[in-house]
Length: 67
Image 1 (cartoon, helix red, strand yellow):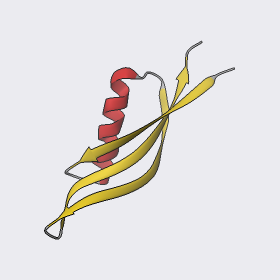
Image 2 (cartoon, helix red, strand yellow):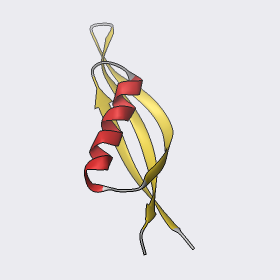
Image 3 (cartoon, one colour):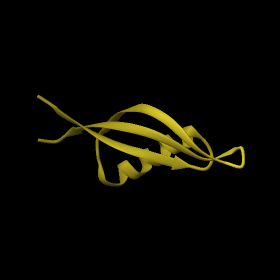
């Protein structure tokens, strides 16, 4: 039987939503092994002077826990 845990992170980027997800994955990968999936729960952005200056992606990463 496998145990799956979920870790929620918010990735931030000044380039794109996709890059924000990659940023969150990069951070999660520093300390978590066996990441098998991501559920992007939502996207938000910071606006300044009528332009998007920061992209945010709320991500939930699933990973198997070794027993």
